[in-house]
Length: 182
Image (cartoon, rainbow, N blue to C red; front, side, top):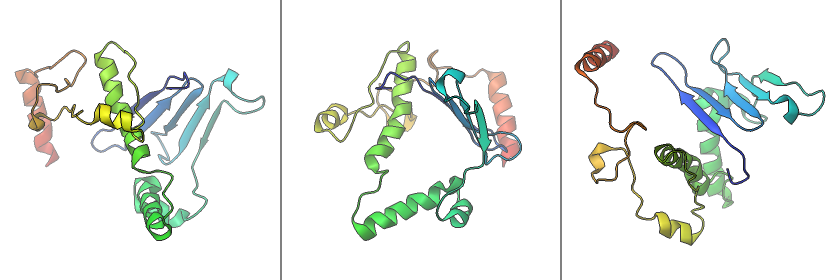
């Protein structure tokens, strides 16, 4: 991070299971719980990074200070509701929302730049501030994408080991699993 912090963001989901997110930082971690009440949030702080008397671990169910009942029924843990509410308020008032297109791109580009870093032996890659013309110009033609339908020779591999072709046994297993999904 630009402040010297190191962050590791892990995301996962399997069919039939909820999405799981864990974010590690220099001072601790935050994750949604995977067992029991999956709407809970776990925050853990390194013992030397917390105030005296403050617990190392806190597990709680977040509560929205406004619109709680409507937001929790809307989807994506309230994210859908608040995204649409902020959008509508920006249109009504003319005041830009806190989370604008630039913030959205910044949050998304982290994964792209992280993958570039992983493929380049963990070399640092900038998170460009696309509010600045010089950064927009630098990344204007950047179409780096793993999508095989987009063409081009500059597609990233799906593994740090390069392109891995599944063998016949793996293909049979995948076909078997996928046929049960329909």
